[in-house]
Length: 124
Image (cartoon, rainbow, N blue to C red; front, side):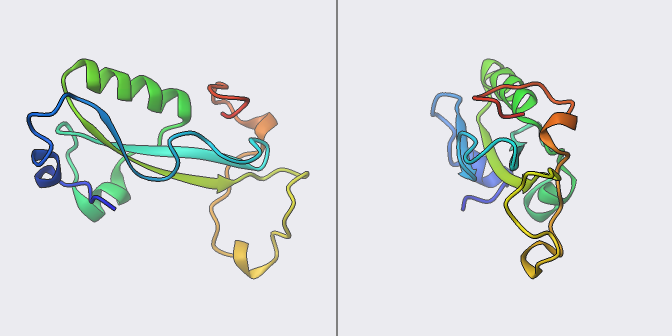
């Protein structure tokens, strides 16, 4: 995985501005009622690098991510994208939340209670 550092961005100098996926899927996978996808974008505008970036950079919903990525590219900046998916707190989910796999999981709101807009095949 390419780390979110200004030195790594400098290695891309001279290339056209673009969106580079460094972790996670470029598009959401799985049942949108079971998982929520979130992204962090690193660019030359980012005040944090490396582990500080992962700790402090905002997690963006899909619609906000797409809007911000487009803004950065239009401004002539390449961005590195780091995605994650969180299980949803939904009564129809297929897993047992009391199981060891989910003990430290951070859950997203259930799909019906999620205030974020739909942006891709019913994903919010």
